[in-house]
Length: 206
Image: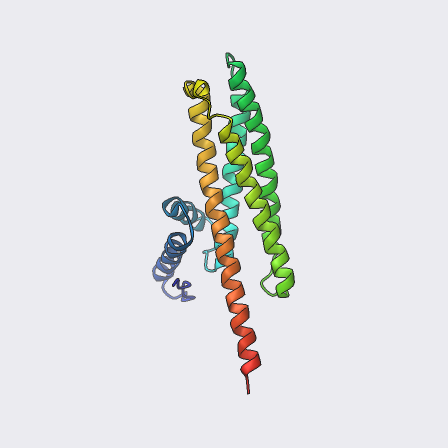
């Protein structure tokens, strides 16, 4: 069971340790790539308001995923202009450019949706927002995997300049996106549990 960081502001170092432990616990409990999750969110946490809730973790993870996707998309677009690519390599790179552009679009939608998604909404509204975010992030993962599939040919695999470097970028992006989706699931589950507990308490109140 995870524990939210305390709100103690009298001891900054203790508060920072609490946040770090919160990030580690959630990444290890929810994601497939916990080390990468901890690295990304710890770095993000050091440059922003401390990540002290499940929603903030999900928002941060999505923001990191979008940033990585944009960086990968830029890199792959440049790779498409490399001279001397074999036709099969060029097609794979061009397809990947399109897939990564779609990835950026889907993640941008998810970031915007989650940013306006309040935990105070009625549960039906909450479920609708949750479905939107999860659908868009899931679609982003599909586009990333489709890009990787284009580089699965042994012929392309011999090209270090294109295949290896593009794959490294996209795999990293896909892993970060997978972690983000897991933390969105985690936030939604925690919210639903809290809502259910609150409803039961209201019903059972004297």
